[in-house]
Length: 245
Image 1 (cartoon, rainbow, N blue to C red):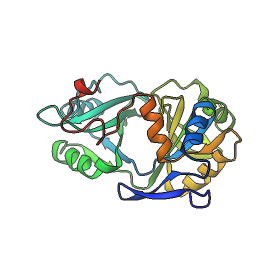
Image 2 (tube, rainbow, N blue to C red):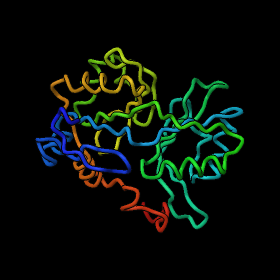
Image 3 (cartoon, rainbow, N blue to C red):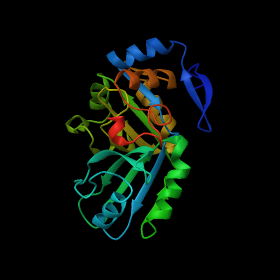
């Protein structure tokens, strides 16, 4: 990020790029017209496994107002942790990873500012499940109308993924676990990759002419324009999912 000229700021205990030399407005508009690359490795990635997927999904449904038992292999769903009053403790993404067999498990992505309390919440309430924070993985997001073209070049066959699905694949020869999802209102992918490969993957994506680096500033304006809530700003423990829409 520093090599790319980013202005770095503290955020949730991390040094994060708020913008690059082009500026927030240019980055925002580029994501709407081309493809933007976001480093969201500060987000929490958690694996939840146990005695079969049904048992894990049933247990997690006690903490979230969502149907996880109905997830098919490779399907992702947006949800919340709620407290006893229905207030939102955090919003999160839940994916059924696996091939429809006994090895199926849940992968969860949670907000950076909440991941310690979320992990404690899971450990306290799902004591018969195995809860693993995936601290050795980074998370990159490729967003925008040109993302499909870039992915088709670097990961042939990725274009047939549907919204909110997950797949193991290679991007530029690097092993990743990618979901067709995002936080900008655009088409795109969120890409979980081994931390050791994150820089190589970012450079491979940025080498494509359609891709530019995008910082936290434009990430915020993009999600706001798309009407997507940010935890701690638009939703918190005083907000119920119903009130949040």
